[in-house]
Image 1 (tube, helix red, strand yellow):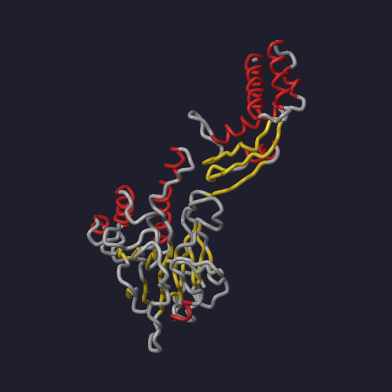
Image 2 (cartoon, helix red, strand yellow):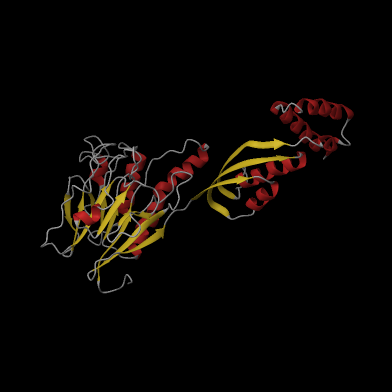
Length: 384
């Protein structure tokens, strides 16, 4: 099956978990801004994908904002992007309140909020329970919003069940978690077989930031499209949307996992200088890297490790080789075994100072080790 097949009755993009306005407090100010802005910038690629494939609709399955009352920069930024699309009757966009940005009387989705006032007619906020929306003569969307940040209702199971006389393509859209574990209670639980039991051809959900089908071999797909930009380290298979085509015959959707993210997040631990040298030469300009150094190096190697990290991070004057870098150096230790060799040729006062510090480091004093290393750097500077 391909998207140009005359038997394709419905085409849509399914996306969720934009988390507009999310802050990244563990990063420095410049990197925080880059990561925060990327959450709005990625929508250009999401909407561009929809336009290129001439889809009928874009289904946005919740947590579009990181909180129910985002600042003006975020709701106005999204509103302006939607207005600039100028899609008119070509295709429609459906915004579903999730548990991070629930529909409340004072939230960004409230009818009186200026965000709602600026939305074009072809953008619709899901604001009714079990809302039914005609997508075409052949297809219908059923959706329910989250009205609080926590809840125990299965929003999928309260959507209308297919009647025997209903032969339309039925799409469901809710926000919640299909995760289940004995003794663990999740918020807004979604039954893994809800799509089958309610008679849907596709159930669009949001909440989990990884792209996955639940269960993987389901006859009727329940799909998490992932967050279009990852939000943290450890989010596997994130940075995608689902591009979906539904045929009239058979009704089994074709689902394409489409990459839209700018950033790839990566955890990396280097346990040798050779590993760090190798990492320095990788193509990481579009990566967010959390680098942990776990090694003991003699003074020259220690200095080289610092230089490599500086090249990867960048300076005020020069871009780094890594897009965004966090470094944990608590495991980087100075090997003082032959430290005296590093001070050969240095003035006697420095050599004696190094010997005294070396004696203290025998007790593994981190302060003495740092002082010894700074003394080594000083001798290198003087020797130049």
